[in-house]
Image 1 (tube, rainbow, N blue to C red):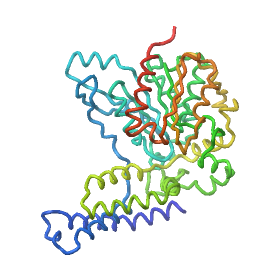
Image 2 (image 1 turned 60 degrees about the horizontal axis):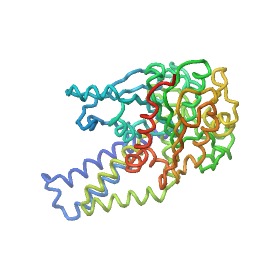
Image 3 (image 1 turned 180 degrees about the vertical axis):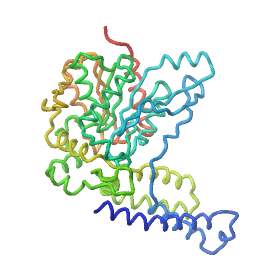
Image 4 (image 1 turned 180 degrees about the horizontal axis):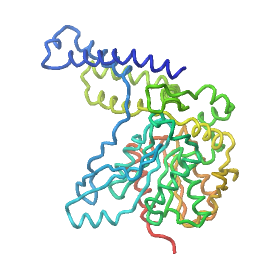
Length: 417
């Protein structure tokens, strides 16, 4: 019922948001006589703020069309390499007309970026992908909004997530692949590679795990505490709702994106309130650069997706309540997850000093679990001054984290044996 109420509210706010947008444009367009009305700029700023508070935020595009690689401007084409009901494996194909550059591009390492399925779209890793494209062939997991997946496609559990990762690794080719997992997927990625290793399959050349809850009991954060202070029944009773009839996934149980977004905002309400007030003041002052930066950030931040209920509840139970991975008790589709079985893949873990989502030590714990990987093929980095997002996006990612990730990948870009 809550989801339906949200849809009714959206249907009311939608026309009001469109009206506010049209009014703001009418009061700021230089060809409009209304720009000369006294107080027009103040009215326009208020209308735009109203528009942005009430509008529907659709999934953003990656929008990566070119990068500089090997000293040349390289064209980028986004392709779907593998299409699954709950995820598209996307490749960012690089093109050049220069024969020497083409040969250099062919020799670059192949990277699979496993994006989180935890509220925001995979485009949150746009900066991660754009930076990696300088020196790598890049794939990414682009998760589908669960409300857009017909109920006839069945349920999607954490075990299915693990199976998807295995399939993507096999599709690309493990013997030439490096996997980078950011936040939540560090757990299913480690499970997928562990299972493949235990079966005797080829595993990726390297695993880079960034800011993930491998061992949530280490330096727990507010996110961890919420998961441990409420029973699983509380999450199911309060956060799980049914997709309304106006979406392809009607009847599917999900953790709705609008509830997740409310949780994100509730973590730092004053920060968001001040940000919107500053946006209003920037519009009044005519500070178009800062105003555009606000629009760009919140276009991404406010765009959220629904998570399949089964997957979300599995993650809460398996990762944050029973800690099955670090305890060595996790079974996926009847197979025990044994990270110690991994021997051929190199391992790099990256943590932010100020990470308030995955605390220090939670990702580093992967080294104790992956005891089969020789010490000289493992490394751990703590990024000073970095919060959660700073380790994979922004200036600190580009200037501090990325060079270390790039060098680690280059170092282990050949199969063992």
